[in-house]
Amino acid sequence: MPLVMKFYVINNTSWKLPEAFLQWNLKHFTKALKVRHAKDLKKQLGIVLVGNEEIRRLNRKYRGKNKITDVLSFATDEKGGPFLGDIVLCVPRIQKQARQHQLHDVEEFSYLLLHGLLHLLGYDHEKSAAEEKKMFRLQDKLFADLQDRDILGAVAKISQKSGQKVRRKSGKKA
Image 1 (cartoon, rainbow, N blue to C red):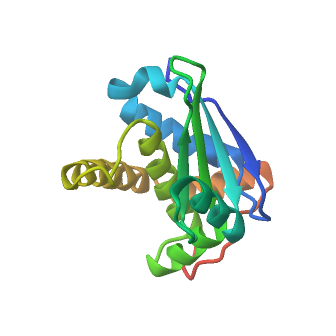
Image 2 (cartoon, rainbow, N blue to C red):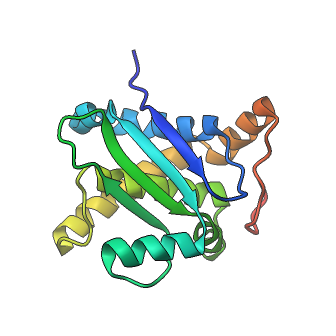
């Protein structure tokens, strides 16, 4: 039986993202990471979508950086508990970076969701140059694998099934 990560979503934005798309992402991430992180991937994950001011407030409060960022990860302090942590994603920053990277919003979202998940699993690119290289090499490989599975096609199918359209902000066509 495939490992399926449990999650909940708090969306404090107007961006409509089907939960089935989040499940699709997490299914692929857990499949790729299960050998090394099977125990943690059985835990529940929180996904929180926020705007610029909220991410700035959180970044200032928890990291001492008074600036907008794209993603923050908050691991639980409860060792062995059922909860892995929260990934807080800034929707306006995702949309801006998607345009800069010539990606669709959902592709940038997937990349940053993966980034946040890797942090919760113990990877830390700010620890050392070697850790940075290790984390980004894994992140880029897993994201490339996900793109090979056709992120945009998955979103189109999921949106069609759910009747919920994902609004486009980037310059690329779905």
